[in-house]
Image (cartoon, rainbow, N blue to C red; front, side, top):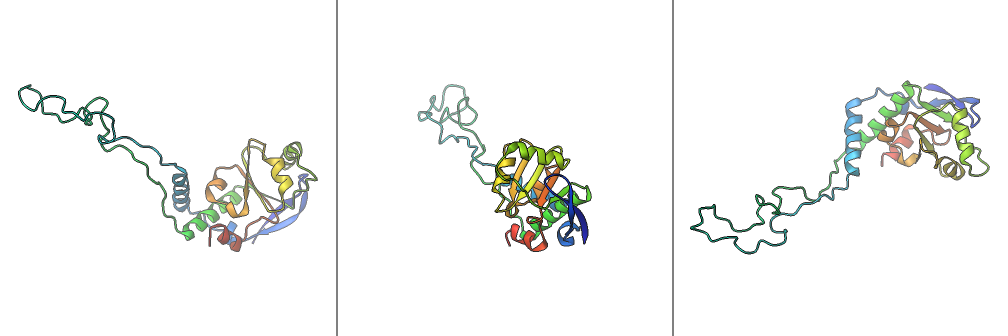
Length: 211
């Protein structure tokens, strides 16, 4: 197992922690990560776009001119798609963009993303958050002490209420629970910050993937 130095909220070393090779030591599978991230972004789409067909456009009930004798092509309605103000032919309608993604693929994508972040030195582990009370100022101070710059994903547990309220107003910080950990959020942040209690193992990764 790989070993990572653990720090406290003041940025000082507080021992070391072993990383589960089944989660942090796999060979990153880029095609799987791409497919899972694409599916996750597709599921976020609302799919509420809609256009009106010729049967839904108001008006056009009367035949615009007689069938014969005008020299023009015969027409049955001014709301046909080729008329200005007419209906839309083959336009978008409400739909779902969800893609089926197997659980094994979701788990592999998360492990690949975590392993990639560890290889780049972007994973940080703190022993715990010792905020006596909620304080955004203390949250900013803690991130500065840990040497974190840029976007950071902080994985918090059930007992970290003060930490949640201390970090939630910092623009570059994204908070997430261990059960919500996913490949997209891991990949789109510059740093991943765990506590010793939220550091995922192989069992926890399976549970977060819905198994």
